[in-house]
Amino acid sequence: MPDMLEITAYALQVLLIIMALAIVTHKNTGTIIVLIAVFSLVTASLYVINKAPDVAIAEVAIGSAIIPLIYVISISRQREFIVLDKAMDDFIISDDAFTGVGYIFLKRFTDFYHLELNISNDVRLCSVGRGREQKLCEETNVDLIVSKDEETGKYLLKGKQSNILMHKLKQMARDYDTIEVVTFKDRDFGD
Amino acid sequence: MIKHVILIAMLLAIYAVFTVSLQDLEQIYQTSADYFREFGVDQTGSNNLVTAILLDYRLFDSLFEAGILLIAVSGIIWISKHDIEEKNARFMLDKFKTPDLFVTFSRLVYPLMLAFGFYIIINGHVSPGGGFQGGAIVATAILILYYIDADKETNIGMIVTVEKFLYLTILIIASLSIFTRGTFFTNVFPYETSSTSTQVIYLVTLNILIGFKVALGLWAIFTAFLKEGR
Amino acid sequence: MDPMLTFLVILIGMYGLSTSKNIIKSVFSVTIIESGVILLFLNLGNWQGGSIPIINGAADLIADPLPQALMITTIVIGSTVTALALMLCIKVFHHYGTVEWREILRRGEGK
Image (tube, rainbow over all chains, first blue to last red; front, side, top):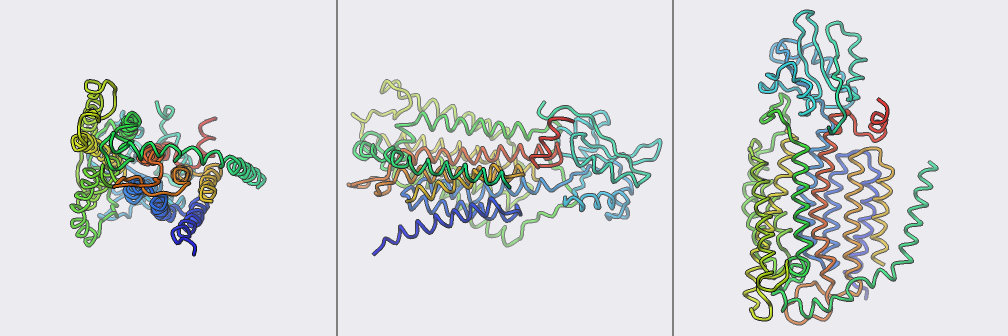
């Protein structure tokens, strides 16, 4: 009679190979996170079969909660477009709702590139002076700063020059008279 | 397409080489396991031989592994550091709300997980477990706290400072053996003269310190990520 | 044979690493390779069979505790290295606006 533990080990190994193939070839990153969590559980049971309970405890503790969490956060951050609203008038918010001209424009832009629009009007960030806006863009993760030019009445959208999305935003903003896109000339990454 | 074919051919070549060399590879381990089986418990006082290797025979390895953890945590915090204060940057479109049922269950599970983590740490020398695994479980339990209270503020700098002091303490305790046995990084109590129950004191102390250090390191890591995610 | 099947997992991870177009997918592949390497070490430490390396009374043959002790440290280090890579990935996204390898390399060479 064959050893049941051995059969289980072989079955789990085949399952592991199938799941590794699924993780490598799958397109949707949200599904991959779930697959990674299950993958680490399968490997943990294989560690137990290979007579290593200490390693299995470590794998379960780390692979079940902490690794999926950091993947989820980093992937959700990748779909975001963070806008800092310094204009404080009806460009983005009118009548306490997101119906302004600028909001519709930005929403169209982010929907086109499958991004998630995230607008912040944090008081502490908005109080940063005009000269330090470039530093703010580099130090924090803010992608775009919206402000109003008092003399011409135009709305200025400022962002980093290295960001590929800014070039696409520039092309889209040609149709609008009141919007002007400005890019900072920035230093190399990691200075 | 041709690139994929070449890549798969190369990987298959690696696989063939591995198949040929497997006969030699198999002899690497488990030929010397008899030594650990015969003398391990007497020399280190630990029934769990993995803990015996981590905290006695190869303490040098695990010490610098803990050092690498410290360096990685410092790197993560340095990368995610912002000069301009970004605390409590609230977004108008905040969709991440934890369900009430989840919060209630988290409150029930949190103390149990913390107790389980401490159990794993303290019993590392008789049952599967030890500082590294228990520290990871304690860190997971602390992670649940963030689900209960999403606006919890944590001072990362404080965590890393405590972690550094713990690492220094671990180094000092590990080096104490030069006074009693003449060599660095082994059990303080010489196995020839002291009983097993005396040697256990050293194992439990080092396990607890390593456990707290690992828990603080992982805590700092996911706090940095959660700050990034807000 | 067990190590043969385990080595396949490492090879799948290598395939993913060389064909991935996205930074995040590369990190996923590194995680797979790491799990495969850990499993390979444990297989090699257990090729004769035997019981778990915890001595309570007499034991005939035990799995080698040395690779197990090395692999525990590997898991903890691997998770922190993954976290470091993902944190760099977030920074790269907010700097370049994309996480595709091709775009980033093109922008890095000629502006």
